[in-house]
Length: 623
Image (cartoon, rainbow, N blue to C red; front, side, top):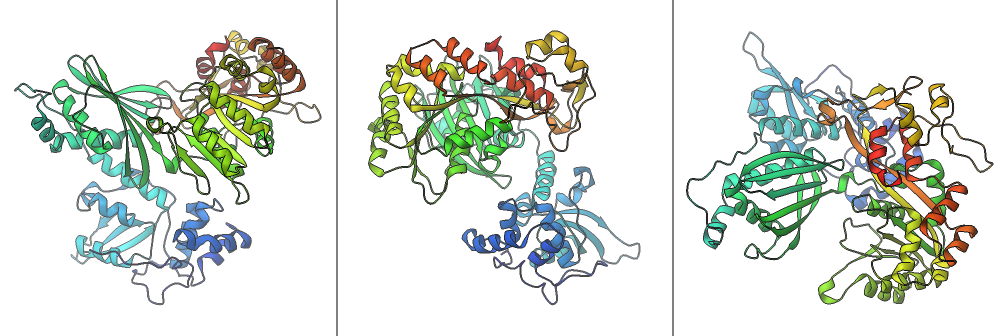
Protein backbone atom coordinates (compact mmCIF):
# COMPACT_ATOMS: atom_id res chain seq x y z
CA UNK A 1 0.00 0.00 0.00
CA UNK A 2 1.36 3.42 -0.93
CA UNK A 3 1.00 6.33 1.46
CA UNK A 4 -0.78 9.44 0.31
CA UNK A 5 1.79 12.04 -0.91
CA UNK A 6 1.85 15.29 0.99
CA UNK A 7 3.43 18.54 -0.26
CA UNK A 8 5.66 20.25 2.27
CA UNK A 9 3.38 23.23 2.75
CA UNK A 10 0.05 21.40 2.86
CA UNK A 11 -0.67 22.54 6.40
CA UNK A 12 -0.09 26.18 5.48
CA UNK A 13 -2.70 26.12 2.76
CA UNK A 14 -6.40 26.52 3.39
CA UNK A 15 -8.17 23.39 4.55
CA UNK A 16 -9.34 21.07 1.73
CA UNK A 17 -12.77 21.99 0.43
CA UNK A 18 -14.24 18.54 1.05
CA UNK A 19 -12.18 16.50 3.49
CA UNK A 20 -13.18 12.87 3.81
CA UNK A 21 -13.23 12.99 7.59
CA UNK A 22 -16.55 12.19 9.24
CA UNK A 23 -18.37 15.10 10.85
CA UNK A 24 -17.60 15.18 14.56
CA UNK A 25 -19.59 18.23 15.71
CA UNK A 26 -16.79 20.80 15.41
CA UNK A 27 -16.62 23.59 12.84
CA UNK A 28 -13.45 23.61 10.70
CA UNK A 29 -11.48 26.83 10.29
CA UNK A 30 -10.18 27.32 6.76
CA UNK A 31 -7.48 29.82 7.66
CA UNK A 32 -3.78 28.83 7.26
CA UNK A 33 -2.10 27.11 10.16
CA UNK A 34 0.38 29.94 10.68
CA UNK A 35 -2.43 32.46 11.11
CA UNK A 36 -4.13 30.24 13.70
CA UNK A 37 -0.90 29.85 15.66
CA UNK A 38 -0.39 33.63 15.72
CA UNK A 39 -4.01 34.21 16.77
CA UNK A 40 -3.59 31.81 19.72
CA UNK A 41 -0.38 33.58 20.75
CA UNK A 42 1.75 30.47 20.23
CA UNK A 43 4.16 32.13 17.76
CA UNK A 44 4.99 35.66 16.62
CA UNK A 45 4.81 36.87 13.00
CA UNK A 46 8.62 37.08 12.91
CA UNK A 47 8.96 33.47 14.10
CA UNK A 48 6.49 32.31 11.45
CA UNK A 49 8.37 34.22 8.75
CA UNK A 50 11.64 32.60 9.86
CA UNK A 51 10.06 29.13 9.71
CA UNK A 52 8.62 29.76 6.23
CA UNK A 53 12.02 30.94 4.99
CA UNK A 54 13.87 27.77 6.09
CA UNK A 55 11.04 25.27 5.70
CA UNK A 56 12.08 24.12 2.23
CA UNK A 57 15.61 23.26 3.40
CA UNK A 58 14.37 20.24 5.37
CA UNK A 59 11.33 19.41 3.18
CA UNK A 60 8.95 19.60 6.11
CA UNK A 61 5.70 21.29 7.05
CA UNK A 62 5.74 24.66 8.71
CA UNK A 63 4.41 23.21 11.96
CA UNK A 64 7.32 20.78 12.09
CA UNK A 65 9.76 23.60 11.33
CA UNK A 66 8.35 25.77 14.13
CA UNK A 67 8.75 22.89 16.59
CA UNK A 68 12.28 22.16 15.38
CA UNK A 69 13.23 25.82 15.85
CA UNK A 70 11.66 25.65 19.34
CA UNK A 71 9.31 28.55 18.59
CA UNK A 72 6.39 26.47 19.85
CA UNK A 73 5.60 22.95 21.08
CA UNK A 74 4.09 20.11 19.08
CA UNK A 75 1.04 20.28 21.38
CA UNK A 76 0.48 23.91 20.38
CA UNK A 77 0.71 22.96 16.70
CA UNK A 78 -1.72 20.10 17.39
CA UNK A 79 -4.26 22.51 18.92
CA UNK A 80 -4.09 24.77 15.88
CA UNK A 81 -4.50 21.77 13.56
CA UNK A 82 -7.51 20.65 15.54
CA UNK A 83 -9.07 24.08 15.05
CA UNK A 84 -8.23 24.06 11.34
CA UNK A 85 -9.77 20.64 10.69
CA UNK A 86 -12.56 20.80 13.27
CA UNK A 87 -11.31 17.81 15.27
CA UNK A 88 -10.92 17.14 19.00
CA UNK A 89 -7.39 17.04 20.43
CA UNK A 90 -5.67 15.40 23.39
CA UNK A 91 -2.26 16.27 24.79
CA UNK A 92 -1.66 12.77 26.18
CA UNK A 93 -3.44 9.55 27.07
CA UNK A 94 -2.64 6.63 29.41
CA UNK A 95 -1.75 3.38 27.64
CA UNK A 96 -4.53 1.63 29.57
CA UNK A 97 -7.07 3.57 27.47
CA UNK A 98 -6.04 1.64 24.32
CA UNK A 99 -7.93 -1.59 23.56
CA UNK A 100 -5.35 -4.34 23.06
CA UNK A 101 -7.46 -6.40 20.64
CA UNK A 102 -7.58 -3.46 18.22
CA UNK A 103 -3.81 -3.09 18.24
CA UNK A 104 -3.34 -6.79 17.39
CA UNK A 105 -4.86 -6.14 13.95
CA UNK A 106 -2.43 -3.29 13.16
CA UNK A 107 1.27 -3.98 12.42
CA UNK A 108 3.67 -1.82 14.39
CA UNK A 109 5.49 -0.73 11.22
CA UNK A 110 2.21 0.65 9.81
CA UNK A 111 1.40 2.46 13.05
CA UNK A 112 4.84 4.07 13.23
CA UNK A 113 4.98 4.99 9.54
CA UNK A 114 1.62 6.76 9.70
CA UNK A 115 1.75 7.86 13.36
CA UNK A 116 -1.73 6.64 14.25
CA UNK A 117 -3.23 4.21 16.75
CA UNK A 118 -6.76 2.81 17.20
CA UNK A 119 -8.16 3.65 20.62
CA UNK A 120 -11.66 2.25 20.99
CA UNK A 121 -14.33 0.54 18.84
CA UNK A 122 -18.02 0.89 19.67
CA UNK A 123 -20.89 -0.82 17.84
CA UNK A 124 -24.61 -0.15 18.00
CA UNK A 125 -27.12 -2.81 18.98
CA UNK A 126 -28.78 -2.49 15.54
CA UNK A 127 -25.67 -3.95 13.93
CA UNK A 128 -24.78 -0.80 11.97
CA UNK A 129 -21.22 0.21 11.27
CA UNK A 130 -19.44 0.98 14.52
CA UNK A 131 -17.33 4.01 15.34
CA UNK A 132 -13.56 3.53 15.56
CA UNK A 133 -11.77 6.18 17.58
CA UNK A 134 -8.31 6.74 16.14
CA UNK A 135 -5.47 8.78 17.61
CA UNK A 136 -3.49 10.47 14.83
CA UNK A 137 -0.89 13.21 14.52
CA UNK A 138 -1.56 14.10 10.87
CA UNK A 139 -5.17 14.69 9.74
CA UNK A 140 -4.14 14.96 6.09
CA UNK A 141 -3.41 11.23 5.72
CA UNK A 142 -6.90 10.52 4.43
CA UNK A 143 -6.04 7.34 2.49
CA UNK A 144 -4.65 5.78 5.67
CA UNK A 145 -7.88 6.56 7.50
CA UNK A 146 -9.81 4.92 4.66
CA UNK A 147 -7.65 1.81 5.11
CA UNK A 148 -8.53 1.66 8.80
CA UNK A 149 -12.22 1.92 7.96
CA UNK A 150 -11.89 -1.13 5.70
CA UNK A 151 -9.83 -3.15 8.22
CA UNK A 152 -12.08 -2.54 11.21
CA UNK A 153 -15.37 -2.24 9.27
CA UNK A 154 -16.20 0.96 11.13
CA UNK A 155 -16.50 4.69 10.64
CA UNK A 156 -13.27 6.40 11.67
CA UNK A 157 -13.45 9.21 14.21
CA UNK A 158 -10.14 11.04 14.55
CA UNK A 159 -8.69 12.62 17.68
CA UNK A 160 -5.49 14.58 17.13
CA UNK A 161 -2.46 14.12 19.37
CA UNK A 162 1.09 15.52 19.16
CA UNK A 163 3.50 13.23 17.24
CA UNK A 164 5.63 12.73 20.36
CA UNK A 165 2.62 11.57 22.38
CA UNK A 166 1.46 9.17 19.64
CA UNK A 167 4.98 7.77 19.33
CA UNK A 168 5.24 7.17 23.08
CA UNK A 169 1.88 5.38 23.08
CA UNK A 170 2.92 3.17 20.15
CA UNK A 171 6.16 2.23 21.91
CA UNK A 172 4.37 1.54 25.21
CA UNK A 173 1.59 -0.58 23.66
CA UNK A 174 3.70 -2.69 21.34
CA UNK A 175 6.58 -3.18 23.79
CA UNK A 176 4.01 -4.50 26.31
CA UNK A 177 2.93 -7.09 23.76
CA UNK A 178 6.52 -8.11 22.96
CA UNK A 179 7.72 -10.77 25.37
CA UNK A 180 11.35 -11.23 26.29
CA UNK A 181 13.12 -13.82 24.20
CA UNK A 182 14.14 -16.83 26.26
CA UNK A 183 17.00 -18.84 24.89
CA UNK A 184 16.60 -22.49 25.84
CA UNK A 185 19.63 -24.57 26.59
CA UNK A 186 20.82 -26.91 23.89
CA UNK A 187 21.54 -30.50 24.73
CA UNK A 188 24.22 -30.95 22.11
CA UNK A 189 27.72 -29.59 22.59
CA UNK A 190 28.53 -26.34 20.81
CA UNK A 191 31.87 -26.08 19.07
CA UNK A 192 32.81 -22.37 19.00
CA UNK A 193 35.54 -23.03 16.45
CA UNK A 194 33.12 -24.45 13.85
CA UNK A 195 32.57 -21.52 11.46
CA UNK A 196 29.67 -23.20 9.64
CA UNK A 197 27.74 -23.57 12.90
CA UNK A 198 28.67 -20.01 13.81
CA UNK A 199 27.22 -18.62 10.58
CA UNK A 200 24.08 -20.69 10.96
CA UNK A 201 23.57 -19.62 14.57
CA UNK A 202 23.96 -15.96 13.68
CA UNK A 203 21.04 -16.22 11.29
CA UNK A 204 18.85 -18.08 13.77
CA UNK A 205 15.62 -16.13 14.38
CA UNK A 206 15.63 -16.45 18.22
CA UNK A 207 19.15 -15.00 18.37
CA UNK A 208 18.15 -12.08 16.13
CA UNK A 209 15.08 -11.40 18.25
CA UNK A 210 17.15 -11.64 21.44
CA UNK A 211 19.71 -9.07 20.26
CA UNK A 212 17.03 -6.78 18.84
CA UNK A 213 15.10 -6.91 22.11
CA UNK A 214 18.24 -5.97 24.07
CA UNK A 215 18.79 -2.91 21.90
CA UNK A 216 15.11 -1.90 21.83
CA UNK A 217 14.65 -2.22 25.60
CA UNK A 218 17.89 -0.33 26.29
CA UNK A 219 16.77 2.49 24.00
CA UNK A 220 13.37 2.60 25.69
CA UNK A 221 15.03 2.82 29.12
CA UNK A 222 17.33 5.59 27.80
CA UNK A 223 20.39 3.52 28.65
CA UNK A 224 23.78 4.80 27.55
CA UNK A 225 25.48 1.40 27.36
CA UNK A 226 24.68 -2.29 26.99
CA UNK A 227 27.20 -4.70 28.51
CA UNK A 228 27.00 -8.31 27.29
CA UNK A 229 29.36 -10.27 29.52
CA UNK A 230 30.20 -14.00 29.33
CA UNK A 231 30.30 -15.73 32.68
CA UNK A 232 31.26 -19.26 33.66
CA UNK A 233 27.78 -20.66 32.95
CA UNK A 234 25.62 -17.73 31.83
CA UNK A 235 25.51 -14.62 29.70
CA UNK A 236 24.90 -11.56 31.87
CA UNK A 237 23.43 -8.43 30.26
CA UNK A 238 23.62 -5.12 32.12
CA UNK A 239 22.43 -1.66 31.06
CA UNK A 240 23.90 1.60 32.27
CA UNK A 241 21.04 4.02 32.97
CA UNK A 242 21.86 7.51 34.28
CA UNK A 243 25.41 6.39 34.96
CA UNK A 244 24.49 3.33 37.08
CA UNK A 245 24.63 -0.31 35.91
CA UNK A 246 21.55 -2.55 36.28
CA UNK A 247 21.34 -6.24 35.42
CA UNK A 248 18.50 -6.79 32.93
CA UNK A 249 18.87 -10.29 31.47
CA UNK A 250 20.59 -13.66 31.76
CA UNK A 251 20.88 -16.40 29.13
CA UNK A 252 22.66 -19.77 28.81
CA UNK A 253 26.37 -19.59 28.00
CA UNK A 254 25.91 -21.92 25.00
CA UNK A 255 24.44 -19.03 22.98
CA UNK A 256 27.22 -16.52 23.63
CA UNK A 257 29.05 -17.22 20.35
CA UNK A 258 25.80 -16.78 18.41
CA UNK A 259 25.01 -13.47 20.15
CA UNK A 260 28.56 -12.21 19.53
CA UNK A 261 28.36 -13.23 15.86
CA UNK A 262 25.01 -11.46 15.42
CA UNK A 263 26.29 -8.21 16.94
CA UNK A 264 29.47 -8.40 14.84
CA UNK A 265 27.45 -8.88 11.66
CA UNK A 266 25.34 -5.83 12.52
CA UNK A 267 28.48 -3.78 13.21
CA UNK A 268 30.38 -4.98 10.13
CA UNK A 269 33.12 -6.71 12.13
CA UNK A 270 35.11 -9.85 11.38
CA UNK A 271 33.24 -12.73 13.03
CA UNK A 272 36.20 -15.09 12.55
CA UNK A 273 38.56 -12.90 14.63
CA UNK A 274 38.12 -13.76 18.30
CA UNK A 275 41.61 -13.13 19.65
CA UNK A 276 41.84 -9.34 19.18
CA UNK A 277 39.60 -6.44 20.26
CA UNK A 278 37.43 -4.92 17.52
CA UNK A 279 35.45 -1.70 17.15
CA UNK A 280 32.48 -1.00 14.89
CA UNK A 281 29.29 1.01 14.53
CA UNK A 282 25.61 0.22 14.09
CA UNK A 283 23.07 2.73 12.83
CA UNK A 284 19.41 1.94 13.37
CA UNK A 285 16.09 3.73 13.57
CA UNK A 286 14.47 2.66 16.84
CA UNK A 287 10.92 3.82 17.63
CA UNK A 288 11.24 6.56 15.05
CA UNK A 289 14.55 7.87 16.48
CA UNK A 290 17.97 7.74 14.85
CA UNK A 291 20.25 5.83 17.22
CA UNK A 292 23.98 5.49 16.54
CA UNK A 293 25.65 2.60 18.39
CA UNK A 294 29.36 2.10 18.97
CA UNK A 295 30.32 -1.55 19.40
CA UNK A 296 33.49 -2.75 21.12
CA UNK A 297 34.53 -6.37 21.63
CA UNK A 298 37.36 -7.72 23.77
CA UNK A 299 38.45 -11.33 24.47
CA UNK A 300 38.17 -12.39 28.14
CA UNK A 301 38.81 -15.59 30.05
CA UNK A 302 35.23 -16.78 29.45
CA UNK A 303 34.86 -15.57 25.86
CA UNK A 304 34.35 -12.33 23.99
CA UNK A 305 32.69 -9.50 25.86
CA UNK A 306 30.62 -6.87 24.01
CA UNK A 307 29.86 -3.29 24.96
CA UNK A 308 27.35 -1.31 22.90
CA UNK A 309 27.18 2.44 23.50
CA UNK A 310 23.91 4.04 22.40
CA UNK A 311 23.94 7.61 21.11
CA UNK A 312 20.43 8.97 20.65
CA UNK A 313 20.93 11.90 18.29
CA UNK A 314 17.39 13.19 18.79
CA UNK A 315 17.94 13.43 22.56
CA UNK A 316 21.24 15.29 22.25
CA UNK A 317 20.67 18.76 23.72
CA UNK A 318 23.40 20.79 22.01
CA UNK A 319 22.77 23.91 24.06
CA UNK A 320 24.79 25.39 26.90
CA UNK A 321 21.52 26.51 28.47
CA UNK A 322 20.30 22.90 28.73
CA UNK A 323 23.24 21.10 30.39
CA UNK A 324 22.77 22.42 33.93
CA UNK A 325 25.20 25.33 34.23
CA UNK A 326 24.43 27.98 36.81
CA UNK A 327 23.83 31.49 35.52
CA UNK A 328 27.24 32.84 36.53
CA UNK A 329 29.08 29.84 35.01
CA UNK A 330 27.07 30.13 31.80
CA UNK A 331 27.88 33.82 31.41
CA UNK A 332 31.64 33.25 31.83
CA UNK A 333 31.74 30.25 29.48
CA UNK A 334 29.93 32.20 26.77
CA UNK A 335 32.45 35.03 27.16
CA UNK A 336 35.34 32.55 26.90
CA UNK A 337 34.15 30.78 23.75
CA UNK A 338 33.55 34.09 21.97
CA UNK A 339 37.18 35.16 22.45
CA UNK A 340 39.34 35.31 19.32
CA UNK A 341 42.16 33.18 20.76
CA UNK A 342 43.21 31.11 23.75
CA UNK A 343 42.60 27.58 25.07
CA UNK A 344 39.48 26.43 26.91
CA UNK A 345 39.92 23.01 28.51
CA UNK A 346 37.13 20.76 29.82
CA UNK A 347 38.36 18.18 32.34
CA UNK A 348 36.87 15.13 33.99
CA UNK A 349 36.86 11.33 33.83
CA UNK A 350 35.34 9.26 31.04
CA UNK A 351 31.57 9.61 30.89
CA UNK A 352 31.39 13.01 32.59
CA UNK A 353 29.83 14.80 29.61
CA UNK A 354 32.95 16.58 28.31
CA UNK A 355 32.16 15.92 24.64
CA UNK A 356 28.58 17.16 25.05
CA UNK A 357 29.90 20.37 26.61
CA UNK A 358 32.32 20.94 23.72
CA UNK A 359 29.62 20.24 21.12
CA UNK A 360 27.32 22.67 22.93
CA UNK A 361 30.05 25.33 22.82
CA UNK A 362 30.54 24.78 19.09
CA UNK A 363 26.78 24.90 18.45
CA UNK A 364 26.62 28.21 20.34
CA UNK A 365 29.35 29.95 18.32
CA UNK A 366 28.70 28.24 14.98
CA UNK A 367 28.18 31.04 12.47
CA UNK A 368 28.78 31.29 8.70
CA UNK A 369 31.58 33.82 9.29
CA UNK A 370 33.61 31.35 11.38
CA UNK A 371 35.77 28.52 10.04
CA UNK A 372 35.47 25.72 12.62
CA UNK A 373 37.46 22.47 12.38
CA UNK A 374 37.46 19.50 14.76
CA UNK A 375 39.60 16.39 15.13
CA UNK A 376 37.90 13.70 17.24
CA UNK A 377 38.14 10.07 18.26
CA UNK A 378 35.48 9.21 17.27
CA UNK A 379 33.15 11.73 15.64
CA UNK A 380 30.07 11.10 17.78
CA UNK A 381 27.68 13.71 16.34
CA UNK A 382 27.84 15.48 13.02
CA UNK A 383 27.39 19.25 13.24
CA UNK A 384 26.18 21.18 10.20
CA UNK A 385 28.64 23.80 8.95
CA UNK A 386 31.61 22.32 10.83
CA UNK A 387 34.38 20.20 9.30
CA UNK A 388 34.98 17.17 11.52
CA UNK A 389 37.92 14.78 11.14
CA UNK A 390 38.04 11.24 12.51
CA UNK A 391 41.32 10.09 14.05
CA UNK A 392 42.84 7.11 12.19
CA UNK A 393 45.98 5.91 14.06
CA UNK A 394 46.57 3.10 11.53
CA UNK A 395 47.40 5.66 8.83
CA UNK A 396 49.11 8.06 11.27
CA UNK A 397 46.17 10.48 11.38
CA UNK A 398 46.47 11.42 15.05
CA UNK A 399 45.33 14.40 17.08
CA UNK A 400 48.73 16.00 16.56
CA UNK A 401 48.93 15.43 12.79
CA UNK A 402 45.33 16.53 12.27
CA UNK A 403 45.86 19.65 14.36
CA UNK A 404 49.06 20.49 12.48
CA UNK A 405 47.20 20.20 9.17
CA UNK A 406 44.36 22.41 10.43
CA UNK A 407 46.68 25.39 10.77
CA UNK A 408 47.07 25.43 6.97
CA UNK A 409 43.29 25.80 6.52
CA UNK A 410 43.01 29.24 8.17
CA UNK A 411 40.66 28.14 11.00
CA UNK A 412 39.04 30.49 13.51
CA UNK A 413 38.08 27.80 16.01
CA UNK A 414 39.68 24.38 16.52
CA UNK A 415 38.28 21.57 18.65
CA UNK A 416 40.66 18.76 19.65
CA UNK A 417 38.94 15.70 21.11
CA UNK A 418 41.61 15.17 23.77
CA UNK A 419 45.11 16.39 24.63
CA UNK A 420 46.95 13.14 25.34
CA UNK A 421 50.61 13.88 24.68
CA UNK A 422 53.23 16.63 24.53
CA UNK A 423 53.09 17.00 20.74
CA UNK A 424 49.35 17.65 20.70
CA UNK A 425 49.62 20.04 23.66
CA UNK A 426 52.43 22.06 22.04
CA UNK A 427 50.62 22.41 18.72
CA UNK A 428 47.41 23.45 20.51
CA UNK A 429 49.30 26.10 22.47
CA UNK A 430 51.03 27.38 19.31
CA UNK A 431 47.63 27.60 17.60
CA UNK A 432 46.18 29.60 20.49
CA UNK A 433 49.15 31.97 20.55
CA UNK A 434 48.84 32.65 16.81
CA UNK A 435 45.24 33.82 16.94
CA UNK A 436 43.04 30.71 17.15
CA UNK A 437 40.49 29.64 19.75
CA UNK A 438 41.18 26.04 20.80
CA UNK A 439 38.67 23.87 22.67
CA UNK A 440 39.78 20.53 24.05
CA UNK A 441 39.52 18.02 26.91
CA UNK A 442 42.01 16.52 29.32
CA UNK A 443 41.58 13.75 31.90
CA UNK A 444 41.99 15.20 35.40
CA UNK A 445 39.91 15.13 38.56
CA UNK A 446 39.56 18.89 38.96
CA UNK A 447 40.20 22.08 37.04
CA UNK A 448 43.45 23.11 38.80
CA UNK A 449 45.10 19.75 38.08
CA UNK A 450 44.63 20.43 34.35
CA UNK A 451 47.34 23.10 34.58
CA UNK A 452 49.84 20.82 36.32
CA UNK A 453 49.01 17.96 33.93
CA UNK A 454 50.14 20.04 30.95
CA UNK A 455 53.38 20.89 32.77
CA UNK A 456 53.90 17.20 33.59
CA UNK A 457 53.56 16.43 29.86
CA UNK A 458 56.56 18.69 29.24
CA UNK A 459 54.97 22.02 28.29
CA UNK A 460 56.81 25.04 29.65
CA UNK A 461 54.88 26.66 32.54
CA UNK A 462 55.00 30.14 30.97
CA UNK A 463 53.39 28.78 27.79
CA UNK A 464 50.60 27.16 29.80
CA UNK A 465 49.98 30.38 31.72
CA UNK A 466 49.93 32.58 28.62
CA UNK A 467 47.72 30.36 26.44
CA UNK A 468 45.05 29.03 28.84
CA UNK A 469 41.90 31.14 29.26
CA UNK A 470 39.80 28.87 31.47
CA UNK A 471 39.42 25.26 32.63
CA UNK A 472 36.15 23.59 33.54
CA UNK A 473 35.89 20.37 35.54
CA UNK A 474 32.57 18.56 35.49
CA UNK A 475 30.65 15.48 36.58
CA UNK A 476 27.21 14.07 35.84
CA UNK A 477 24.81 13.26 38.65
CA UNK A 478 21.31 11.81 38.63
CA UNK A 479 18.27 14.04 38.98
CA UNK A 480 15.49 13.09 41.36
CA UNK A 481 12.33 11.89 39.66
CA UNK A 482 9.93 14.87 39.80
CA UNK A 483 6.92 12.52 39.97
CA UNK A 484 7.86 10.52 43.07
CA UNK A 485 10.52 12.54 44.97
CA UNK A 486 9.86 13.11 48.66
CA UNK A 487 10.87 15.83 51.15
CA UNK A 488 13.82 14.67 53.26
CA UNK A 489 15.23 16.20 56.44
CA UNK A 490 19.05 15.98 56.18
CA UNK A 491 21.48 15.59 59.03
CA UNK A 492 23.48 18.64 60.08
CA UNK A 493 26.72 16.76 59.32
CA UNK A 494 25.56 16.05 55.76
CA UNK A 495 24.85 19.74 55.19
CA UNK A 496 28.21 20.79 56.59
CA UNK A 497 29.98 18.31 54.26
CA UNK A 498 28.29 20.06 51.34
CA UNK A 499 29.33 23.49 52.54
CA UNK A 500 25.84 24.43 53.74
CA UNK A 501 25.35 26.27 57.03
CA UNK A 502 23.03 23.90 58.92
CA UNK A 503 21.64 26.53 61.34
CA UNK A 504 20.74 28.93 58.56
CA UNK A 505 19.35 26.07 56.43
CA UNK A 506 16.91 24.88 59.09
CA UNK A 507 15.93 28.52 59.69
CA UNK A 508 15.06 28.93 56.02
CA UNK A 509 17.78 31.54 55.36
CA UNK A 510 20.48 31.82 52.69
CA UNK A 511 22.75 29.00 53.81
CA UNK A 512 25.56 28.53 51.25
CA UNK A 513 29.01 29.24 52.61
CA UNK A 514 29.85 30.66 49.19
CA UNK A 515 26.66 32.23 47.84
CA UNK A 516 26.31 33.28 44.21
CA UNK A 517 27.11 36.94 43.71
CA UNK A 518 26.33 39.32 40.88
CA UNK A 519 28.80 41.69 39.21
CA UNK A 520 28.30 44.23 42.02
CA UNK A 521 29.03 41.65 44.72
CA UNK A 522 25.45 41.23 45.93
CA UNK A 523 24.36 37.72 46.97
CA UNK A 524 21.89 36.13 44.58
CA UNK A 525 19.00 34.03 45.91
CA UNK A 526 18.75 30.35 45.09
CA UNK A 527 16.19 29.96 42.30
CA UNK A 528 13.76 27.05 42.28
CA UNK A 529 13.40 25.70 38.70
CA UNK A 530 10.20 26.49 36.86
CA UNK A 531 7.46 23.93 37.40
CA UNK A 532 8.83 22.80 40.79
CA UNK A 533 7.82 23.83 44.26
CA UNK A 534 10.41 24.42 46.92
CA UNK A 535 10.40 21.69 49.59
CA UNK A 536 9.22 22.69 53.07
CA UNK A 537 11.65 24.72 55.19
CA UNK A 538 14.39 22.56 56.67
CA UNK A 539 14.03 19.80 54.05
CA UNK A 540 15.49 18.92 50.66
CA UNK A 541 14.14 16.65 47.95
CA UNK A 542 15.09 13.00 48.42
CA UNK A 543 14.59 10.16 45.98
CA UNK A 544 11.86 7.60 46.53
CA UNK A 545 13.65 4.24 47.09
CA UNK A 546 10.69 2.41 45.54
CA UNK A 547 10.45 4.78 42.57
CA UNK A 548 7.55 4.87 40.15
CA UNK A 549 6.72 3.76 36.61
CA UNK A 550 8.16 6.98 35.17
CA UNK A 551 11.64 6.32 36.60
CA UNK A 552 11.58 2.49 36.35
CA UNK A 553 11.57 2.17 40.13
CA UNK A 554 14.92 3.94 40.68
CA UNK A 555 13.72 7.25 42.11
CA UNK A 556 15.96 9.09 39.62
CA UNK A 557 15.22 10.31 36.11
CA UNK A 558 17.80 11.89 33.82
CA UNK A 559 21.09 13.57 34.70
CA UNK A 560 22.45 17.07 35.08
CA UNK A 561 25.95 18.44 35.40
CA UNK A 562 27.97 19.92 38.25
CA UNK A 563 30.74 22.26 37.22
CA UNK A 564 33.93 23.83 38.56
CA UNK A 565 35.06 26.77 36.43
CA UNK A 566 38.58 28.10 36.90
CA UNK A 567 39.36 31.29 34.99
CA UNK A 568 43.02 32.24 34.52
CA UNK A 569 43.43 35.39 36.60
CA UNK A 570 46.72 37.18 37.22
CA UNK A 571 47.18 35.37 40.55
CA UNK A 572 46.56 31.96 38.96
CA UNK A 573 48.89 32.87 36.10
CA UNK A 574 51.70 33.79 38.52
CA UNK A 575 51.28 30.50 40.38
CA UNK A 576 51.36 28.55 37.10
CA UNK A 577 54.57 30.27 35.98
CA UNK A 578 56.15 29.44 39.36
CA UNK A 579 55.14 25.80 38.76
CA UNK A 580 52.96 25.72 41.91
CA UNK A 581 51.12 22.51 42.72
CA UNK A 582 47.43 21.99 41.98
CA UNK A 583 46.43 22.49 45.62
CA UNK A 584 47.87 26.00 45.75
CA UNK A 585 46.24 26.93 42.46
CA UNK A 586 42.86 25.60 43.59
CA UNK A 587 43.07 27.43 46.92
CA UNK A 588 43.84 30.71 45.15
CA UNK A 589 40.95 30.20 42.73
CA UNK A 590 38.52 29.44 45.58
CA UNK A 591 39.63 32.59 47.40
CA UNK A 592 38.80 34.52 44.23
CA UNK A 593 35.27 33.08 44.10
CA UNK A 594 35.57 29.76 42.26
CA UNK A 595 32.84 27.30 43.20
CA UNK A 596 34.11 23.72 43.51
CA UNK A 597 32.28 20.68 42.21
CA UNK A 598 30.85 19.97 45.66
CA UNK A 599 29.78 23.61 46.10
CA UNK A 600 27.97 23.49 42.76
CA UNK A 601 26.39 20.19 43.81
CA UNK A 602 25.14 21.86 47.00
CA UNK A 603 23.46 24.49 44.84
CA UNK A 604 21.75 21.72 42.83
CA UNK A 605 20.53 20.13 46.08
CA UNK A 606 19.04 23.42 47.26
CA UNK A 607 17.41 23.87 43.86
CA UNK A 608 15.66 20.51 44.26
CA UNK A 609 17.41 18.90 41.29
CA UNK A 610 19.32 16.12 43.03
CA UNK A 611 20.02 14.50 46.37
CA UNK A 612 22.78 14.85 48.93
CA UNK A 613 23.75 11.19 48.35
CA UNK A 614 24.31 11.82 44.63
CA UNK A 615 26.51 14.86 45.22
CA UNK A 616 28.60 13.00 47.80
CA UNK A 617 28.95 10.04 45.42
CA UNK A 618 30.21 11.97 42.40
CA UNK A 619 32.43 14.38 44.37
CA UNK A 620 33.97 11.79 46.70
CA UNK A 621 37.52 12.85 45.73
CA UNK A 622 36.95 16.22 47.39
CA UNK A 623 36.29 14.66 50.79
